[in-house]
Image 1 (cartoon, rainbow, N blue to C red):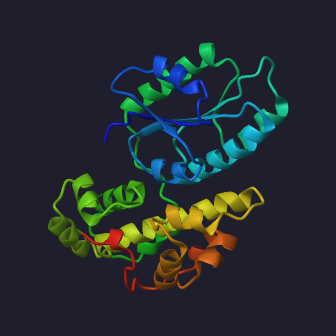
Image 2: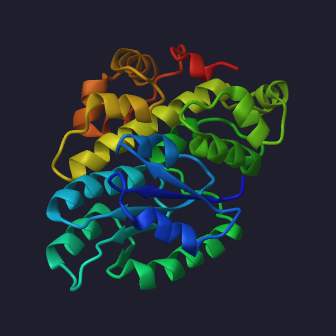
Image 3: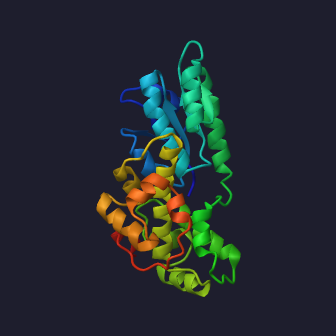
Length: 277
């Protein structure tokens, strides 16, 4: 999927969106996020090539830093631009955004933002290589006697990048197969079913959101972890963590990916309707 979406995380009516729109031309699209939780779903999409956040005050920076941490956990390779828009650089704001994970800093948007966005768009057209899958995700499948490591890696990579509510049919399309063919391929590679691969990817994404908050000395909201894991409510997410990993959502909240790292339980059931074709 082409990377054509520029995300804007800024307070309502912030003037940065028109500046970004002038910098980018069709077929690039500008998407403004109204709530920090929305970044969870969007950053998992393969068509997002850059995230722009604003931090024009300390109050803005605290909110924006949370967005950046979430985004960095969901998409480690996506460029994140922090617009500080100050006559002189504010060291405190810059450090706050840098520690959260921002890559670029803009102090004069009208002059500085356009070349950064255009460079990000240009790099996105070349496409990303295979993502660096986190060990807690890949190791779950390490024991499989995979006859074709490249094909297995392609399936795991597609599952890792899939949107939180992706279905088996979506994953199959990304792998250029039918759902039936993909199930057969996974069986031939000694992998779990596509649905179970998708489920584990979502649960690890949820754990990463928890880990990003812990790295900042905070606890992620259970609802935010659940949403990153593809669930609208906490209770089904908790059941999914218990079934697939033998841990509670509360454990994930306090330990992040570490709560899943030692798990070698077999996949037993799927609780989410998003996991079925």
